[in-house]
Image (cartoon, rainbow, N blue to C red; front, side, top):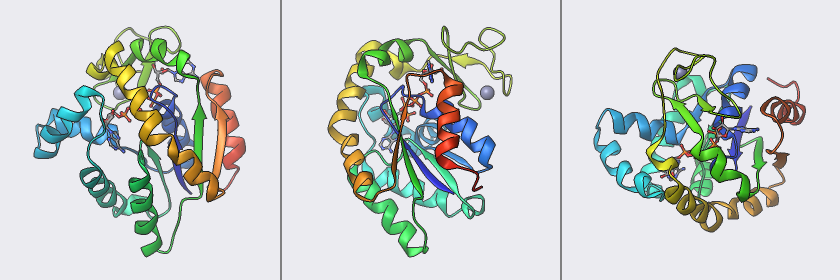
Length: 216
Ligand code: ADP
Ligand code: ADP
Ligand code: ZN
């Protein structure tokens, strides 16, 4: 199964991606996580990406498309994958389609997690992420069992620099201008499914499983 997750920052894409990846045994590919790993390792890609991410802007398409194409060539993607945070522009979506077409495959489902903007600020400013595995927590809505420690891997939980109020506002603007047009793009391809992201994490996951069904 080849799935993409769409939705504004803070919709719950990363949270649901971990659950889906586990349930359907497909790799979870998060462009944000790939960039953050490169930043922490101070690679040339990380240095370039950081300047955009810190401002809440998108990393340029050429860079982003290349890292995703490389990742999708890996063996573990042969039987499917889950893209979280990619595509974020129409050019990225077109590049993904043409890459998959060359391989004789396509995206099975684009899942849009809908959350009104007024919910987002509280979600983002309370978000804590694992430094090691990228798992997402929330101080109020989804706290870790032990404070500041990841339930999954024991890593330290930190607050992302771009989760400040000012940067979140910029990211929401970027989402509306550059990413929201993808809703129409996938609607026209008839593979868009919408889920209500304001429900509890487990309920959202159940609704996603109902949509994806039992094909694994
Ligand atoms: P995204 O990857 O779309 O930016 P995350 O999965 O990181 O979003 O979730 C953003 C924040 O909201 C995190 O702190 C997460 O714990 C919390 N969160 C995720 N899903 C829900 C939900 N259904 N209800 C309340 N809080 C949620
Ligand atoms: P969120 O979980 O809040 O949606 P991500 O971790 O997906 O955030 O992305 C963090 C930042 O990484 C984005 O604000 C952007 O700067 C960069 N980024 C991630 N994915 C992409 C992409 N597909 N295209 C361009 N920039 C991206
Ligand atoms: Zn972890």
